Each structure stands twice: as structure tokens, then as C-alpha cells.
Image 1 (cartoon, rainbow, N blue to C red):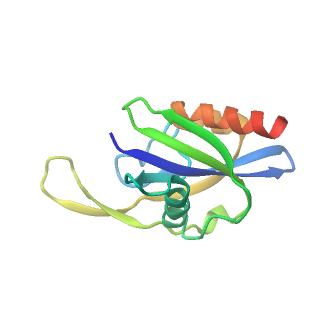
Image 2 (cartoon, one colour; image 1 turned 135 degrees about the vertical axis):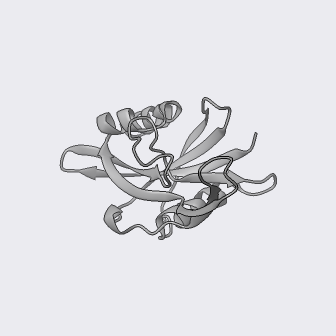
Amino acid sequence: MAASAGILLYRRGAGGLEVLLVHPGGPFWARRDQGVWSIPKGEYVAGEDPLDAARREFAEELGVPAPDGEPIELGEITQRAGKRVRAWALAGDLDASVIHSNTVMIEWPPRSGRSLEIPEVDRAEWLSLADARVKVNPAQVELLDRLQAALSA
């Protein structure tokens, strides 16, 4: 199974700590909300620096480069289907309403032989940690917990 790398962007808002999550694009995800959001992430190949890959994926999915700054290593988690995700946190801010994602080709409907071009990410949103824990892929809750612990230390 391929490995992925991603960046969890965070900021301190009026209501406390907020994180930026992305919602997957396409018809399969259109009506799904809880448990499907994610940190911006993507696959990397053997020999590729995972942090460089995380920065590349951030730019591809949001249309802006990841901010400079000292990344906080959040380690690796394994999602239900076996995908491993290595993540870093970065402090920063961006206007989530103006993201511009790259696109990917999918077969839609499944097994139809027809192709559809969709945005990899259809929207991004700043969320409190409590709201993020409900919306994020369940395996990625651990990344939120690790960020909170790192910032509390």
C-alpha cells in the first residue's frame, strides 16, 4: 500500500485552536460530510522526501504553497483501508473560500467505462478541534490529538 504525506495547517482563532481540513471532490463524496474530511495529503514514492511531498500535495489541493515555518512532526497513522499517512503541522492562515484544487480523472459511474474530471478537493474549511474530530477521517483524529499535545507541551 502506498504511503501518503500531508500538512495539517493550524491557527489560533478567536474561539481557540482551528485546523484546516479539505473535503474530497466528485459525485461519490458530494453528499457525505462526517468522517470524510482530511488533511491535505497525497502519495509519495520511495526515495522522495515525505515532507517535500506533503508540501507539493498541499499546493496541488489548495492552489497555494504551504507556509514557511518550522513543521511539527505528527508521525504516522494508518487509515482503515491500510493507507499510511505521515503528517506535519504548520502554523499559518489562508482564505479557505478561494482554494483551487488540481483535478483528477475518475470512472463515473463506477464500472461504466465513462470518465469524469473532478477536483481532487471541492472545498476547505477552518474548524475548531471539536468540529474537526467529527468531520475528519476517523484515523486522522489521532493527528489532531498529537497537534493539541504538541502545542500544549
